[in-house]
Image (tube, rainbow, N blue to C red; front, side, top):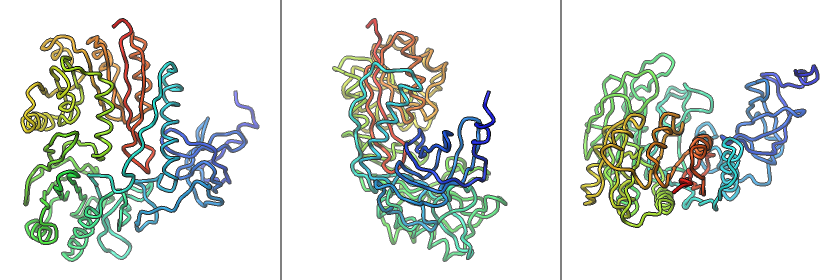
Length: 463
């Protein structure tokens, strides 16, 4: 039972404290202690001394936000993004030296596996840092809003606000061309007097802008998401073509209340429906709403690690259980006997089949289905795989999928993860059923954010 002294020391919501930051937590917040009580401080780095306001008070910890930076860490560097609100919610770590970003991510990955997964007999291989670290994203999603003067703005949600949008002038995660396209569309919409969507009243027209680029091809796709209402898409397409002749324009109409860019009907106004990209020596066509790694250069490094861990010699059978449009599947097909890809998104499977044909790869087969239900039918169709590759969403694998995965009794499991905190318990489940976690390597796909990708190799102990 907590003592009265402990209860008195617990911070209260709204209370302002002076804190020294001495660590980093999973998720990227700074870690401080107030009379021994743990406080997670968003936007703070080790070495900072801050005045922070408590925003959440729980039994064993508190959350806080920085109100004033009293003494900055010596590891801080000037930020580069230029946004109306003065801070960038999309790259919260850009104020920290990049070499320390990489070091922190490496440490957090090891901590997650050891502390959350109870795993220690594995090799944590050297972290793969990003190159480049600026202007690396091939896809950007922006939100329309209205500023205090009533003008349309186009940028990102203010930290902690669903209804307020900070105008983006130069996002240093996006290419200079992508920035120019965003500013052009915003200025055109302003000139036309088009209203932004109001997220409180659910009225207005303009909702989102999605820009996709082919880093290796130069392709450019612009997609406007809007509610029902008058918008001269042909006029926008003509104006866009005059400034960016390589651009295609798509329009998505939606009546969804939530901010979901995939909802609604998408039509082509001008140009091609799909964008093309080059990756790992292959060429891929990507549909407007399909998933594709947002960092093309580092995706090649990530897939290279996955192929290395798979240890293919040209005869193996490989299952890829979250294959998307077939990027990693087809890269592995070049080294395997045959590969089978599964994904729940039917349009992604259609893209994957088309991409296999585009690259003249004949030893790849693709099937649409939920991994929970598709593994057994796939296993009946194809004998036991030698290698299974999984690249699940951030939530990781459900217990049912893990059980189905274990039924395959593959010699090797290559787990590609974008979240070490969900990889850890999944790896623990797999290890408990006769596998060994051999090695893990982190790959920095998202510089200036606390996110990372990693690849883990698990081998059956009786193989």
